[in-house]
Each structure stands twice: as C-alpha cells, then as structure tokens.
Length: 243
Image (tube, rainbow, N blue to C red; front, side, top):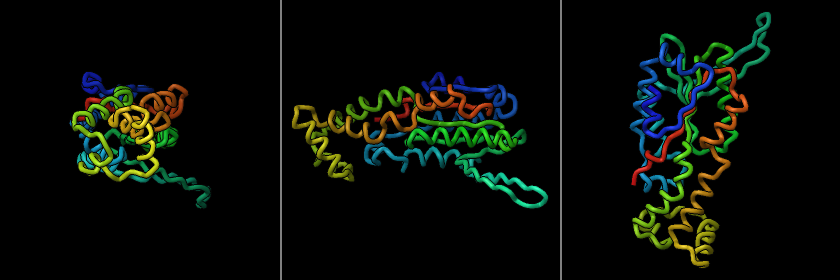
C-alpha cells in the first residue's frame, strides 16, 4: 500500500522491517493513512496568507487523522522499585492508532526546527523498547516540496499579478514584520522583481534548510537515530500544493 504513495510522488522510506509489520498486522490502518495522505492538499494562497505555519494547512491533516482514530496520546513510563517510584517520563505523541495487533505512533513535522526529528525518533525508540508501540511514523515536507517551494510561490505571485506590498494586503497577506518588508524592498530596489524578492524572503524565513524536511530526516535515520524501532518515513510531495 505504501507503493501507492510512492507512485504519487511521496518520499517513502521504511526501516527495521516496518513494511512487513504494516502489511501483516496493520493493513486496515495503513490503508487509512495512505488514503488520508493521498487526499491532503494545500492551497498556495492559504500557505502564503498563513505565513507558512501550521495553522489551517496541517491542522486539516491532523483533524482527518484524528477522525479515523489516530488520536493524541501521552505515554507515561514509570520505574518502580519495591513500591517506590524512582522515575516517571512522559512521551506525548500527536497521533496514536490502536489496533488488535498493537499501536502505531505518528508525528507530523511540517515546519519545526530540525532537532524535533531527534526528539520524535528517540521517543519512538524508548516506547518501542517498552513494547508500547509497534512502530513509529514521521510525516514531513518531502524533497520535491522543499525544492519546488520557491518557484511555486513565485509563480503564484506572478499569476496573481502581485507587484507590491499593497497588492499583498489586498489579498489579506499583510501580517508581516517591518524587517521582512524592508528586505523585500531592498531587493526590489536592486532590480529584482517583487514576486522573486518576496518568494525568496518568505521561503528563507519559513522553509529554510534548518527546518524539518526530508533530507534532515534522512540524515538522522542514516546515523541510526531511533534504532532499532521499526520506522516509516513519509515526505509530502509538491503535488499537494494547489494554485
């Protein structure tokens, strides 16, 4: 079933026999996930107006998963010696799917600082060691989405005929700092078009290389972060962007 995502441009990588576990023990839950991700889209106008953050865009994805039973859960791991608690550690996971064969844990990292990947993978490792989860899943921006973000945003601005800050305000895209405005104005003064200057600043601020995206996730997994927990890594493609 994960091949369906690959055929639609998603980055998909599995580790530590995760594909076998999903196909044998969690076929229905895997089908739910594939269907939900396949239906997820983001309007470029919404992305830009929302400042690139999670409000609106990935909240819809979160709600869609929650509606199918992938709900937030806080795992509490306690160490008790002779009736005395020595240690208690909690691990909050955004989406946990319970099934007869076990539990699947999923985190969405749309636009955080990339060290959040370490947190997620290490949480999965600890929970798997305690038999609290069967495998961990991370969903993030895929390689094509990261690479194509700049031209897609620039192209949308050009198609809308946006040539100034006033044009942005007309479409409700006015919540920007004075520093951001000044940076764009400086590039325009040097001869760069407004769509190019805005897109470059927007992408650098919101979707830079130090944020959560596919290559940063791959780096961690190749170093062994999260081992030996079975892992499924999924990168959203640029095809989810509409407009």
